[in-house]
Amino acid sequence: MADRVAGVRLAPYTTLRVGGAARAFATAHSGEELAALVAEADRRGEPVLVLGGGSNLVVSDAGFDGLVVRVRSRGVEIAEERGRVVLTAEAGEDWDALVARTVAEGWSGVECLSGIPGLVGSTPIQNVGAYGQEVAQTVSHVRVYDRRAGEVRDLRAERCGFAYRHSAFKADLSRYVVLSVAYVLERSGRSAPVAYKELAARLGVRLGATVPLHDARAAVLDLRRGKGMVLDAADPDTYSAGSFFTNPVLAAPEAEELERRAPGHPRWDMPDGGVKVPAAWLIEHAGFHKGYSRGPARISTKHTLALTNPGGPAVTGFPTDPEALAGSPTAPAAPQEAPATAADLLALAREVREGVQAKFGVTLVNEPVLVGLEL
Image (cartoon, rainbow, N blue to C red; front, side):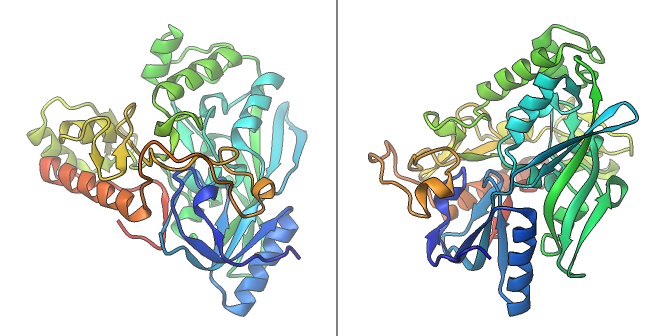
């Protein structure tokens, strides 16, 4: 069993660089160890927080009064299934490194998910998606530790409850711990049909066209960098949790009300009859411009969907490697700006949410997981 360390600060383990200390902290280097640590904590009645790359997490300034388990499991297995590639990755594998490998190998299906920070284990929880792709399109099954049943189970994709930025895992964060994920990919040097207008324009192709995998990845990375969505320790705009709000999907009455308040606003009609609206547009047109700040917390200067901590102290690595720091971050030179707290970031998020609600009658929903906090 992994050693437990008391009082480890959690801020350096998140890309937002906020959060207090954990009462106890342990690192799991395998799926078996991860399940065992959680099971043992459950037997003791101890609260558990499973920590991956920390890129979709906002931790309270009070920290976490329980056990934080850092996922560091490694391993990738490749198999064949009716001419397609089945790639099974441990939860602790770096997601973008895995995407880069699929592109290099000529395996199509996740190339538009390039540049997304974090680990494999988080991808089915959030049903990670970008530029017209989401992991639900390729997930075959997810191996989990079911805390309610006290056993390891394989859940087929149809049992994962995938929806827009949602899943059965996100619906009940206290039940399932993701141990590994299997993706089914096509053997093809070309991308899946390009399904996102902005990406098609960057590639110079029409919607529905395919392009070489390397071209798709390069274009996505370029777009993400322009929005401060590729981690870069030298860029304060990347001290964020990515998009802080999801694009709202409105039912017919809500969509009609928004059309009355903002005729001709951008929208996408959904197959189920709903209407998806870009949250970034709502935020900007509610008066919150790029770079808007509330104290030390700031909207990104590149993209209004990201809330940032521009004064967050840079530490070794991004995100921090816990083995390198042994739970005690280095002391860098003083930041250019005062660092934000979790309370600062939530105050800004509330101001944005309330402003959009007042202007358009639409309630934005946070995308990152909030630990010890409520929006």
